[in-house]
Length: 211
Image 1 (cartoon, helix red, strand yellow):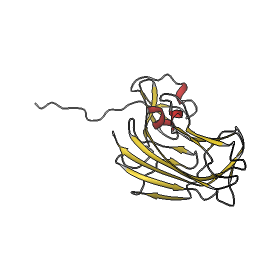
Image 2 (cartoon, one colour; image 1 turned 90 degrees about the vertical axis):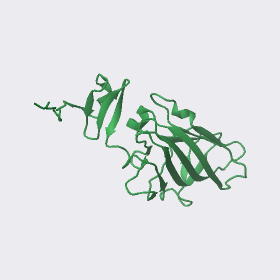
Image 3 (cartoon, one colour; image 1 turned 180 degrees about the vertical axis):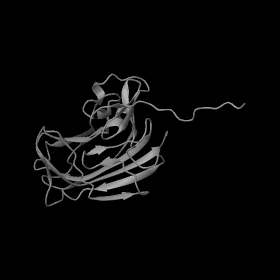
Image 4 (tube, helix red, strand yellow; image 1 turned 90 degrees about the horizontal axis):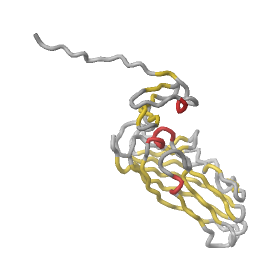
């Protein structure tokens, strides 16, 4: 007589909320579900396994253009006051339908899977009323796990007061479990004086996938 195998198993998934999910005892392989996502405990962290932050697990790219902050409506940067770099993604371009590596509501950069690698280009225009003593600091926010705030740049003003400059920089990073579960944000601060930024664009490319 042939052996019969059970091909379906019912697994109990603990129901919780996004606010409380990290306060629950995290067990290896244990699953939690909220109104937003399904998580699994892995190496002491909650890893989001559904929905993924982009459709499909292959390679691809996305571009997000802001239309709120323009030359006639610049983002004001007060001295020593850090803000999240805004981008409302009013216009988006994708290598294929359904890909998203950025959420314009939460202003968070997203990642699909643990150990995926990415390249991100950040573009904007900037100026300062006192170019001689002002500079900008831009960085990914820190958090649990990998110190992403080390992904940063210092931006100077090589020309005169109130002169417009073009910023264009490429950053590389990989996704740890915290990045997959929570995303990350770009933070920017004016040092030594006030400044303005506008015409903000993000271009994000997944260069390697471990899915």
